[in-house]
Structures are given as structure tokens and as C-alpha cells.
Length: 316
Image 1: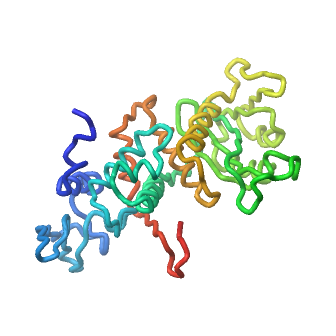
Image 2 (image 1 turned 45 degrees about the horizontal axis):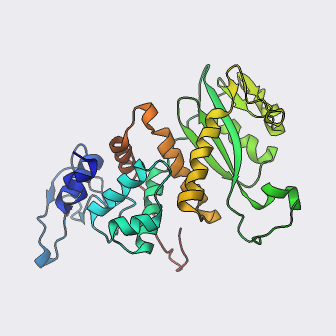
Image 3 (image 1 turned 90 degrees about the vertical axis):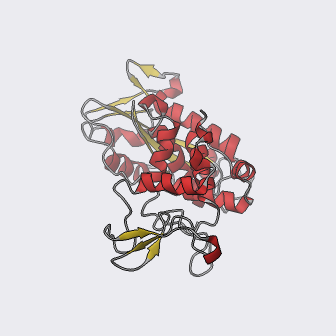
């Protein structure tokens, strides 16, 4: 049976049951007071405007659904379409565009665009633990994507360093056989790169980079610093290479250029979170599409993303 034929992708009651099982494994929890006792389920009744999945807390007396306190709170589209979107984004290796979601889910384009950003927020990891460990290799590298906002489409060649001066800089750290963590940084100087490397990689790890000079001094702080010289066409020396992070960038760039095509600088960090999530929860680590979608749903809790802020300005 196809995954997308499962009842919770097409039936609203089944969708609520599925999300409740994921977010409330030990039973309903009131998002207002945190209580778990004396919570009753209110039967849906469209005639009396009693919506699907409604519960009432006997401790604080407030009503709620499983969507309250998550990125899907106040969502106006049916929950089963939310779940379809999560599965499609979690299972598409290079991502799925808002236009494609708009067509598949049969919702307005703006709705699909905002929905995709909500899901990226759910995929964002709050894990700040050091990457790597004793004997483990962590690769670090930078790439350039898109165009810096506020600069003309055709920028004078050689201005401020040429190519990189007009591009957004992305720094990515990848554990071999493990997770990825990416950052949108202002540039690729020592002051901008080194603090991130120092704060996110275990001192017992083996740091692997290319010949970039900003890694030379910080590399001495780790168990080993191996570097290959791409400028002389050296790509592998023993087990010293940056092929893993280059593989990550291959997927990331194909997705950003071929699927998303246009990304504003202020949204880049969410796209990075999306690609990091899929890479860190990939099939090679034993995590398949359905499990990956479940992890994305678990990441919904305690996060909110609004289209417009209190002043009327866009919050995303």
C-alpha cells in the first residue's frame, strides 16, 4: 500500500488521531496549563460550530486542539492537507516548490508558500551539541548561493573580492556518517568562520577542510586537522578529504537552483534547516520517508510562525 493512501492523508478525523498519537504519546496535554488530568474530548458538530479534534481541560477550563502551540496553530486548511505537505517535503530529496504544493494540495499559492515555511520551521533543529567525537571526522566548507539583497543584478567584476562579494555565504559542517549543520554567514573571513567552527565541533574530533587559510589556526585546537589543496587538484589524501560536505552541497544547490530557483536572503536560514533535516535523517542512517515525516511532526511543538507581525510587517 502506498504511503499516501493512508487514511490520515485523506480523512480529517484520522488526521487528528494520527497527529495526536505523534504529539501526545501519553495522552492529551493542555497547552494552556500543562495538565493531563480531567481532559475530555468534545464531539465534532458542524451545526453547532464545534470543530474537529476539540478537547476541554477540566483544570483550567480552556478548549484546545492538538494544533495549539505548534507551527500549525490557526492554520485554515484541513489538517490532512498539512500532513500531506509534511510528507512531500520530508520525502523529496531536493525539496518541493510552493507552486507544486499549490497544485497538489489544491490551495492558493500564498497558502502553500506559508505552509512550506511553517514546515521548515518544524524541521529546524535546536540541537547545539558539539559535532563529532573521539576519532570522528567532521568536514567544514563554504559555498556561495543566490544574490545579496540590495545589490544590482550585474555587479562589477572584482568588486570587494569578486564572485563571493555578491553572493550569500553558507558554511556547512558535516559529520561523516552523521548529521549536517549549516549557517548563513556574512562572509568567509576568520572572524566570521572560526567562532562557528569552534562552538559546534568537539575538540576530540578530526577537522577536515580544504586549503582555506581561515582554518589553519583553529585547526590546531582539534585532535587533528587534515587539509587537501583543491587548487593543485588534490582532492583525497588517505582519508583526508571534503567529499562528504561537497556531496551535501551538490544536493543543496540542485534543490535551490532547480526546485526553488528564487530565495530571498532573509529566508535562506530556513531552506538550510530543511536540507540539514533531510540530510541528518536520511535513508543511509536507517530513516525512511515515513519516519522522517514523523520527526518533522515532532518538531512542530513549541514553535510558532506568523505571516504578519503585530505592526503589520511580515514576520517571515
